[in-house]
Image 1 (spheres, rainbow, N blue to C red):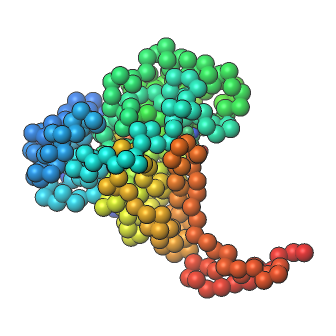
Image 2 (spheres, rainbow, N blue to C red):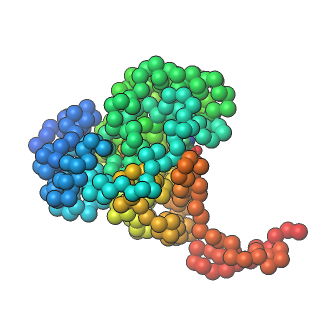
Image 3 (cartoon, helix red, strand yellow):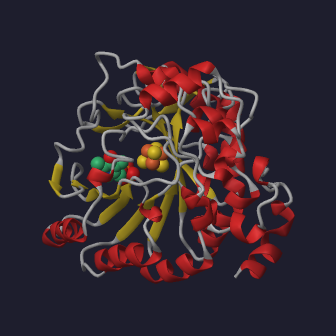
Length: 384
Ligand SMILES: *Cc1c(COP(=O)(O)O)cnc(C)c1O
Ligand code: SF4
């Protein structure tokens, strides 16, 4: 499979240079490309991190004082993408704690999306009529500093036992209206192949289940996890959509490209859910570059989320106006495929609400005055 992938994609692959290896340049390829090696060698302390980046006093303090709130873990692969000298590096801001995490504002919430309130069985949040979110693991390859599920992600006490997973599956089986399941966490692909396959197979066996989705950030933070073996096992359960979470064009490395190519070649439709983060990607040029690279990787930009009101992430938040500015910079100016939906996941559990620029300027009787992406006006006469 690897050989075929390289011949098919070789000319575009050249535009995706391999990620740097930073202090790990002496590590054997076989280790570096092994997801278990990457996982075992994750950076979890300030001391280990200081060997990769020049930690600022603020970062060191945030790690020290925030340690019991939300764990630190970064794969060597992702750490090597960080600028060792620049604390404002967009990769570094996602993986290295900042003092912004220590400030909990009164309006921030532990469970901003009320996922626990809408939980009908262990791990199963059933909010929309025909689909559910199924939390299967608290573990992630990297703990994103902007994570909206800090209340349970990274905490071993929220791990799901086989019995609990069985209860979640039983809930879906008992609810014929559920035709779409988002398997999430944490990151489902931090489970081993057997466990992932067992969950997917049992859900696929339910007659009313039409589509499955896996929400995973491993293509970004641990692309080595997408192995030919995993892909070969999961492709038996299509249609299985894989939604991932790239936030910056620098994350679109050769390794990430190859992980996505393995999935796309095996027929998994790929989507991206970006979070709009201050200091990371709150810039139209960055989002456009990211979406262009994603499309070359056969990943369709699906959502841009406004940052949630979760605790300790308010330093990442931006305004709605910034999100709209980014959308306006995309629609019409570049491929429609590169334009995702901008959504606010409503605080309190109202679900995802799309935010759109206004293209209807005014109505004059049955004449609707519209404006295009260049702000030129056009009339569309409506039928009587
Ligand atoms: C996001 C989400 C889904 C899936 O929503 P889509 O808009 O279909 O991608 C389902 N359930 C919950 C609770 C969610 O937050
Ligand atoms: S991968 Fe997703 S669930 Fe895990 S820490 Fe990052 S944002 Fe949170």
